[in-house]
Length: 573
Image (cartoon, rainbow, N blue to C red; front, side, top):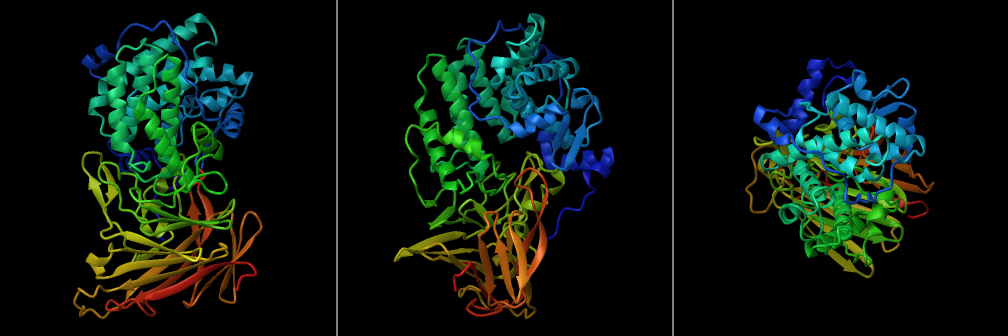
């Protein structure tokens, strides 16, 4: 596959880094401005304290916390080592992406968890940040970044706002209130839907924890509006990203607890959306407890998945088709396959979406076999555009084009995939065996061909067979172009898989030690290099590639326009 061509972060000049950040972060990456009028709006009284502290629910990342206590700050491939507990912002940071992740304070609960010394260290880092950035800073005070930071301070409130001298605690409260007024003043003009969600959640906690319920109904209406806009009826997030659904559910669970602590009745819409989101989290949950990296998702920590599902009063109902979200699932024996058969989200929710039509994730128990290049908000921003391309997914790519072309969203400054047209999947279950027949017309406009993918899983889950074909629709006249069109069917392997090619058979050893074999009637199956971002860093891996040249007038019933392949568990003929 082709990757974004950019200088690695440690070799980029500040000008190159600024250009890359502007291109890949869009409007949300632009520095916030503070006019004299705005500075008056964010001035105000310091609250007396919290009425109660929100419960963070999600367990901390202990490994990250331990690393930070050793003064090692790692984001993606970048790492800096500080001396004697100094904050990272006192040294030149590797990139704007690195700085963005630092200023959001997602790491704060992980440091607090390193008791007893972690409490002192976390409070010191917050106090030093306030001393350097607490009045205002264009980069650190962008709406989304500020809202995340405030959220992380608030869910760590039982330690952050109770530890240290009274003057230090008052200073933290003053800074918190100032930042809250800042995002409240800007929330109506925010075009970043991710930031809008976080602002809605933060504003509701503000009314409950710091304002004794003042503005509660208005904040509740704002949150309900965002729920309706960002959660689909089947419980999937509108971005079609499993990790976003997980984070949305986590936020709502924290808010539901806060409402109870405030001696109020939890609104029905919050309970209803938590139940629906829980169903989709359970739908996506892999055998290892984490989530698959569809769209702009990472694997997510299994502990967080467990934590949110444990909040559900009843066990989430099981289902194999999520029609609104556009996913199909097959589970047989220890094998699990999830197929992406949905259109890209409408604007503005497609700004992080991928062009991965008819790609799939395939797992065997706790072991992951076939995946995509994946995504993580922590991983190097250099790769952000490349992993959205169709070639970064386990599906067919025609002439290196994307199945859903990317367009520019002028309002946000980012790109989004459009389509593909005519995507659908139907399912047939017979004698405890399952077929899925799926198709999309993303290549029809440019090449006059439809991509059809048929998948079959045996009743014991030990055999997954597939067929990919390219066919000219019967309703479409034959083209005079005779030049064959190059294509490739790609299967990106998880980095925990060991792959070897021998006698035209590709042998796959999973993390759990099981052996699978990949076979195909198509000549020239190859193993090529690829990468995986789903665990927060860029990891090297391999991909199976079946390449050929398609007949533009074929009906897709025979080679070269029809390829058959299979994944067979060891000892399965």
